[in-house]
Length: 331
Image (cartoon, rainbow, N blue to C red; front, side):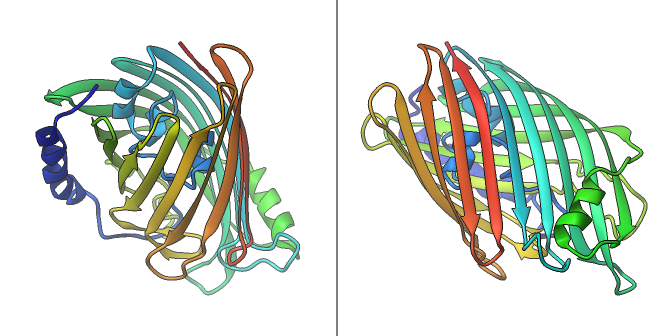
């Protein structure tokens, strides 16, 4: 698809309108956008305007219109924040996620899991752990709304629950391991995502609004809402075949890594021949502590239609360690 310049201007005009749907700040534990998708995470999270494979169901469903006829991914990702061998402190986090997705035009299907635990300061001043477990089933549909501008929406069925427990171990690693393995009562609810994509010969513009309902999973005031409403705007440049440069910026502020954050990400992806692609990126907060996290990733082509993707990321300020692997297929 090759939008005309007016189409890009239409999407830019819609940006402040859609951004108004996103709150300025969201407190308590929040699952970040950077939870799944090896290509996306290898580019530091600059992917909203790049999303052209089956992981678009998580990053920008409208991007399915720019990809191959059909594709699928099976991926696993883990993130930890804080020194896991030190005494527990607010902001320590362990997060695991999986994503199995299928995408074509005009439909995307997905099944994801999320298990995130963090140490925080409870309302009574004590240290506690807050854990969220969920299975998420999603159906994404696409619609052309202006010439060469596509919008996508995802309906999500979520089976999830939260738990809060006192800190009962001497190291952050033991505390988070215990919290992650805890049995949690779950209930079922629904949520929605909305996105848009415009694609010109050398430029793409993307917009993502996640968790429009922002469902609640616990009545405990310390639990908050783990799936807070989040907005993200992205721009991608494709100067030559095989090279993509991208930048993402959050439209609102959320509570990540123990404090309010508004993330910015820049990254790039380059094809080195027909069997190898490499990528790198960095993300940091433009609000509060910057806590930059750099990433490296690569994809190896096993056959005409199958790739293995992997990435590693780390950050000194937050002791961040992030790793993931996925199989990606496309026709």
